[in-house]
Amino acid sequence: MSKDKLTESSLGIVETQYFTFAQAPNEMVLKSGIKLGPITIAYETYGTLNADKSNAILIFHALTGDAHAAGFHKDAKKPGWWNGMIGPGKSFDTDKYFFISSNCLGSCKGSTGPASINPATGKPYGLSFPVITIEDMVIAQRELIKHLGISKLLSVAGGSMGGLQALQWAIMYPQMIKSVIAVATNHRHTAQQIALHEVCRQAIMSDPDWLGGDYYGKTLPARGMALSRMIGHITYMSEKSMDEKFGRKLIGKEKVGYDFSTDFEVENYLKYRGDSFVQRFDANSYLYLTKALDYFDLAEDKDLTTVFKNTTSNFLVIAFTSDWLYPAYQAKEFVKALKLGGLDVSYVEINTNYGHDAFLVEIESQSHLVKHFLARMEKESDRDFDI
Image (cartoon, rainbow, N blue to C red):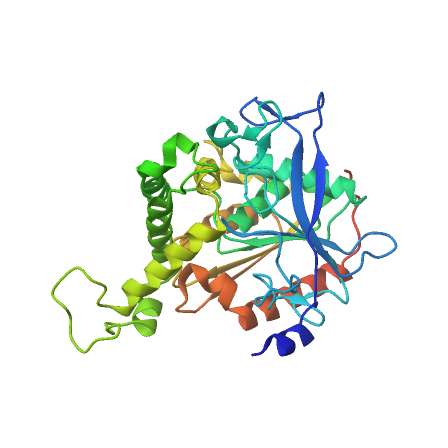
């Protein structure tokens, strides 16, 4: 589809905005106890906030995403990462709702992170940037919502790491949100998920050009970054989707070369993904954000049902049959806890071959669910919210 056609069905040209808070001496206290400030959060908005500010929905991105969820940036060829879901008449309908898409703390996409300038030194933070958590991201997002003058959210929504943030919002600020849409996510990182991230981190840190995180203005740790992304991308697809897309197809040859050159299309694809990742993301941010994911555990040795005891939100939880990074059984664990707590929960498992990436690809099946869920939220009577 041409850009003109895409633009017709989307929001057109959108711009990223920035909000800075936690200026000295009022720095933000992180979960680790370390103070951080000033903090800038990049965000985009779509749609119109209604008179009583009751139609706002907060959107969260996945691990290497950004605030650009929908529409086009000026001169860009591709729309935002959830453009199929957000726009006029779409499941996240900008004719009805006002959306805030926030880039998370620790990222390199406009929000404060390790690549940002440390005001104390005038140089990039690098590894002097404090370790952050999902909770810290949520606190920063709440500051953004306060800045926008919004005291209640009709919903919070996200997939993958975005789903973790949505669940964390339900725990930390239960009276601020009416509903939660959590897609392809879980309530804690398992040993396997932590192990996969550690391999990705080691790939970066073992690159000689990483220089202990002090590579800014020098040669990028490109080999480590590319390898890390290749590993990660394998986890985003399923065995069946990879087989259907690539199989054992050879690249530009009729038979294998019996050497270590690129023979198969899947090899070439992974190299392309790795190389392009080097140009668009910061290596240190990748380390910090994967660590935040690994630290994530809503229960923290408590009974999961009690964790949600103060939550009154309605939940829509979506999982995918072929997702082996965040498998459906993990979603069912926190869905069970929500139901045992007497909460209103709709759980849907979508049959697909797209693996973890399904939350970005399975637009039609998700759209039907989201549209009807939000319509139901609108019809229900308002509750009291406190900021």
